[in-house]
Length: 149
Image (cartoon, rainbow, N blue to C red):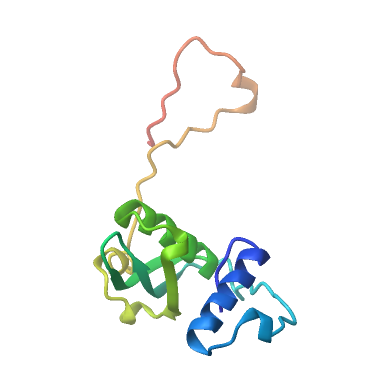
């Protein structure tokens, strides 16, 4: 499984890995199809673990990262932007070794486990009180009260 922005980059990455792993070159092979894979349940938030290798300015590093997203593609795009921000790694230097969907008990990172509390509550900060239809107006002279009563 490869992650790329488009089919041209996907084919290029495929032959890059085939050359490294199997000693197979593009001239000695043929691609039959390039298919995009979709998640089965893209409405439920899941935990994803990504094992990767990247080249920094000095050396090659292995890394394991965890993300929460509704799709694996979203988690991979989070990973690319985080690697660019935190480690200044270009997308072409990052090699995704493995991806996995994790259960809540399998998560290791603290920023992931703190989201697993079933009794977690978020405050409603800007709840506007509903005004009766006949008293509503487009423009009013005073500011609305936005605190919840």
